[in-house]
Image 1 (cartoon, rainbow, N blue to C red):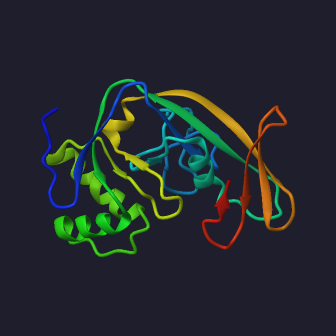
Image 2 (spheres, rainbow, N blue to C red; image 1 turned 45 degrees about the horizontal axis):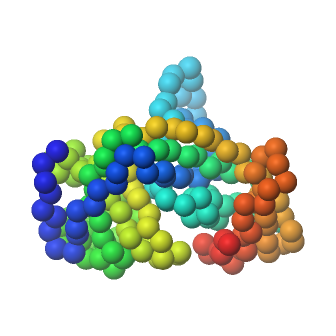
Length: 202
């Protein structure tokens, strides 16, 4: 892959083979998003990754936080932590903060949106194929935890090896807090506090 010269506030980032990435989700496995109330036969294969654009973290708690924020306080539920390893170097674009991502999207694509991540992710997924050849991009300081988040596009997802899918029980402590317990164990992985927003996971 050729050397990138990204414009403006963007820089080049390489993630080396062997690095672990994690994806937290409410879904136990990934399925195609088929239209209509009855999409027909479901005996098709889907890769063990989400579709592009797909969000990952390089630590488990961040990935758990991304999933548990969609659960309801006071209600026992389950989320899944998917673990991956990169088997070939990923060539990505990096931006430091969400402010930088907003600047980049406005300057390069004239995108004016609520900047929740999905709108710009879809635009960058389309851009990645022609002419950029981009495998993903990273926000080095996300707005919730101040930690790196990695958004992989189709070419980047193809370089992931699925290692494990761990079921995690979300067990209410009270109407405002839950603990996250690994399936089949008594191991508390994290504590999550609801706040009508992204909440706090420690």
